[in-house]
Length: 138
Ligand code: THU
Image (spheres, helix red, strand yellow):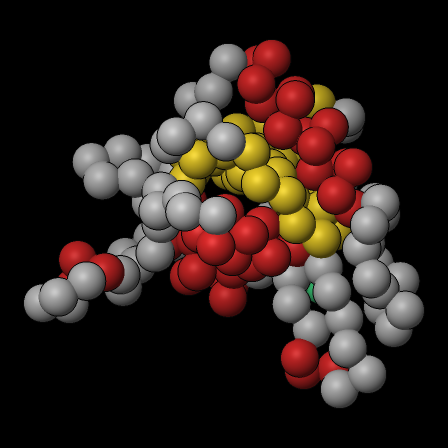
């Protein structure tokens, strides 16, 4: 698990990202901040669309941002929603995160509970996952 300082810092970055959410339809801002194996931080917010189904969650924006900048493994991701305590990534985002679990490692998910970091793992949130290792050529 992360040290408390790093977890708290990721939560702060996630809140900063949530402030940039584009949520005219749900009015439900979400922010995510992730740490890659090379030590960089990437952020994401949810981005909605008038064609509702094209909305992208904060977590996926953060992952795609990191991967587009060269990252291939995520050590940890923090997620916050202004109106919900302890919000967790949706199922689609869990599957996308599973693609970038560090080799021989785990991906830590940092939630905010009563204003404090609470840590779990992607494996706990997405047991028996299907992923790159199930395919011959990941
Ligand atoms: N949303 C996220 O960004 N992440 C989640 O983990 C849950 C849902 C967004 C999608 C949509 O913009 C809004 O929250 C309401 O579902």
